[in-house]
Amino acid sequence: MVGTWKKFHKSPLIPYLGVAAHASWVRTHKPLIPKLYETYKAAGEFIKSHPTEAAQIIAKGTGIPDAVLEDLIESDRLRLNVYWAGTHVDAIDAVFEAGVKAGYLKKMPAADVVYHPAR
Image 1 (cartoon, rainbow, N blue to C red):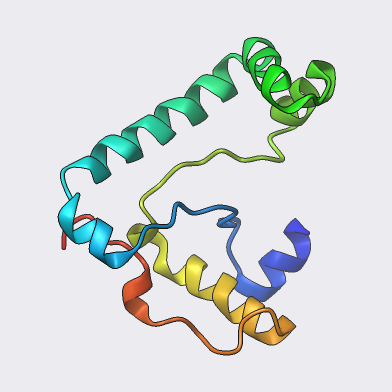
Image 2: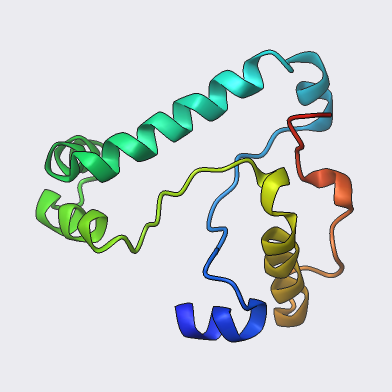
């Protein structure tokens, strides 16, 4: 996967997951957005720095064995690199482009679907 991605995008940065919100929610809740970001960032950092404890917590909620989760966390396959989407639009656009090429998306999403904290 990583090798294929690097050939396609020429970057090790692979956006796996985003937090979605309706534009109207974003407009009316702007002060909450940095707080949500900091919460996700702190969670990612906690998981990476405390894999055993994090695996036990996640196992309780998912039913996945904690040893499996700990191995997954320690392998860094989850990455858990939290960053503002607007700082890496090129990587996100590459994911959208791959979605279009694979037929998952019918067309490229509008540029304003990616949140920019400075806006």
